[in-house]
Image (cartoon, rainbow, N blue to C red; front, side, top):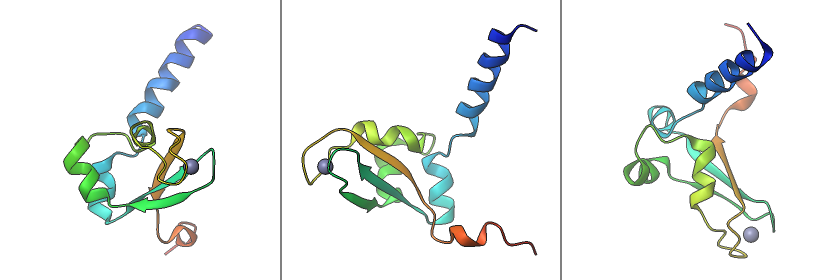
Length: 92
Ligand SMILES: [Zn+2]
């Protein structure tokens, strides 16, 4: 297997594992938005976005559809707004 094919497989894998709106809805997690131009940030309701974009929509791509309410820039990043990130390392 050549290196090109290996890279393509990896890219496809990360696409498949991207967090989707439906995943957040199940966990009652919002969408954290960050403006790359002015630093304005906000948390959006995942339920409302799921109605608009559908449960299979990848969370990192939501930013491309948003506009900053602070400066009007469309350079907005989005990620899941996990509430208890500190507990991910806990072992039961
Ligand atoms: Zn902004």
